[in-house]
Image (cartoon, rainbow, N blue to C red):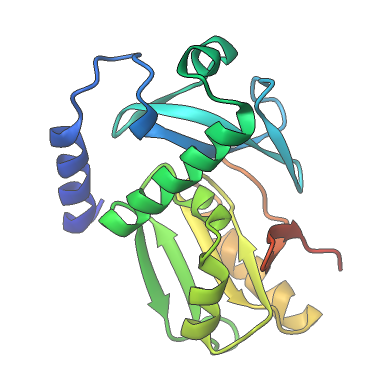
Length: 199
């Protein structure tokens, strides 16, 4: 973990006053999970074998699933909880806990964005404003995203099939050993959110 990652983790830990396993609305987040992960009524399908679950962060390193009873007690519908979780994810991103970096030369020589350093990095793909920000940064309107594991999100120009093949190879080479693997299938970033890319 970089020094910035350690600083962000320390800030989050210092700001956490919720007892372990408490349901804290400020620490409610969406979370990408693969097939085989325990399901809940609040889950929604994302595609490419992934679902979006709702979790609560107990500490900067531990999370747990939200229960239907907790949402009912908080007076939240699944849709309302999902909106609150996205808002919290946006705050987390703005805090710098999820680190984003632009790499000027991907494959073959095109820039790409890498987000990492946090368990919610891959989930940042769900943020509504991400596509517009990435399009401005990469000077491209059609974008793809890769979430090989929970601590990595790569965003790059859609390009042609040959370029996407090279980017898949680059992701496999550099991100195959990540904890909590998700998928090597690609998503297309749209104004309505990520959608599985159909080749």
